[in-house]
Amino acid sequence: MFASHRFAKVAASALVAGGLGLAAVATAGTAGAISSTDDTFLSEITAEGITFDSKREVISVAHDVCFALDDGADPVDLGMELLENTDLTTDQAAVFVLASVDSYCPELSGVFE
Image (cartoon, rainbow, N blue to C red):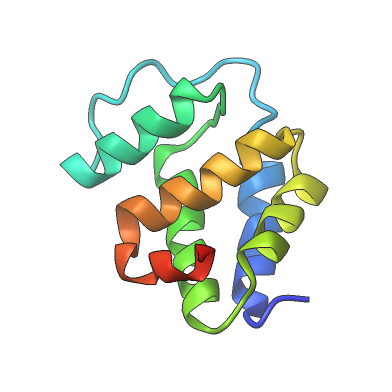
């Protein structure tokens, strides 16, 4: 169980309904990303084969990963939540969590030690 119900709710809606890992067509490139940080994040997950319908939704979920970790959630539990709510592979779920931290909350990278 997550320390943050907000992450679970957003993960379920944004990842499943938004199509993260389920989208038939990924967004092309990262043009129009909100910032260079967003662009880097989107490039990293796209390179892993993670597809999505909405840049804003997937970026929001990445921020929710950070909020959940900051609230004390275990990164493995976050990865498992992604696995349960998407068609992501284990490697893709791990990359998503790592890329979220690398891009949006690098100060929390110690949770992987």
